[in-house]
Length: 405
Picture 1 (cartoon, one colour):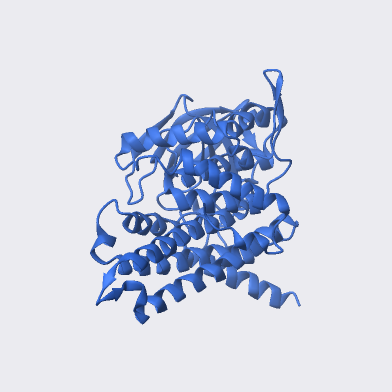
Picture 2: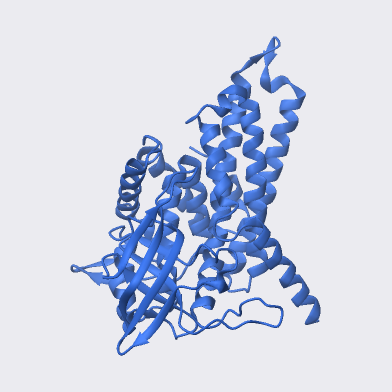
């Protein structure tokens, strides 16, 4: 069992320790023993299976603050997002397997816009199935020319009677190709430019698009270093009912940012899980590896690396759960969330790099734990806002605070 001493920190409620320990016991049986998928077909199948298992065990309900009566019995769910629980779940799952973490995370991110702004009808149609692991969700914001600059999206949605007609493409869409529905962000008004030439974040709306909608297709699949379902989506005169719009027309960008503000903290949680696994494996290896008549752990350079790793993890964990606690307390935490995401992912990259070095040649063998972690963490420094974007957010918030004094 993993050690959960940090759960004594004042950021947590008593139920959080029970949650982490219960998930850890479940993951030992249901995640730790799984073969690691690498090719596209096995990754797709494993992801679908993991969503079902996470749903059956009750973990995906933490992604969906919704409860409903169905089939004569209550589907129990939390009343609102518990960001500390989201981060704890992702940290624990990431420690065991990156794909398990991904499967859980996308249920929340993919349906988050429905939780925040969906009509009661849309919430009732989609969220119970997401919470139960019966439907796979996806978040479709990025485009080839609008990744970090999300306001620059070009995919359009034109109102036509009681429907919107979507045209354009989305890319880098996680769960693309296996999702049952997509929360799609499209432009409902022409672009407006600021005096500095940047695109104003207005005129974007959000919609729920079912995977089988006419005019929607998976244009291509994308293979990346840490395998998971990823695709480019195409919309060609794809007709969506007006009732599938999320929130008011033009509120899509704000809705996307609200969704990311909730789930970006959980990215930091996943980074902590990868980093902690790297440290645990490095310590185990160093203690058992003979070196110069002693063990690798007896060498001062190894000890220095382990000290750096542990210190970076502790500092990132403090920032992560401070941000999650502040969010759960109802605070405006855009700056703290950006700090946590940046600190956790960047320090995890350094920590895992130390682990690869400690393992030596074994650390770069394809499929070895240190090599898998090295691929897993690299993507997190880009997903849900690259490190450079987090720096811009942090600086913007600092300057705004100074101007408003």
